[in-house]
Length: 65
Image (cartoon, rainbow, N blue to C red; front, side, top):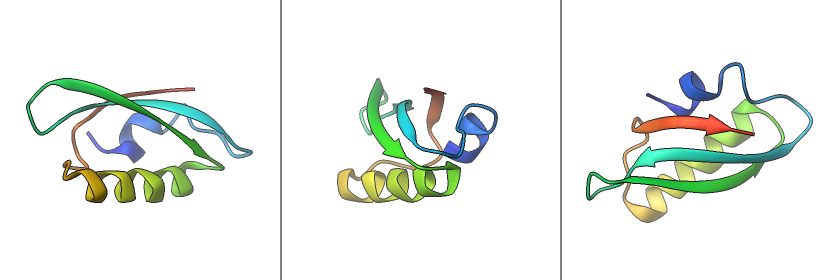
C-alpha cells in the first residue's frame, strides 16, 4: 500500500516521528523513521527516501507514531 493509505488515521498534523515499514528491493521487510509535520510532508519525505534508495513507493506495510 502507499504511505497515504497506511498513514491515513495515524499521521496527525503538528509534527511527529513515524516508523514506516516497507518491503525493500530484496523482498525483505525493512523500516525507516521519518519526522513529518503532516501526511503530505511525510509523503514527500518518503517519496524522496524511496528515490534515493531505489525502493518502490507502494510497498508500505505499516506506519506507527
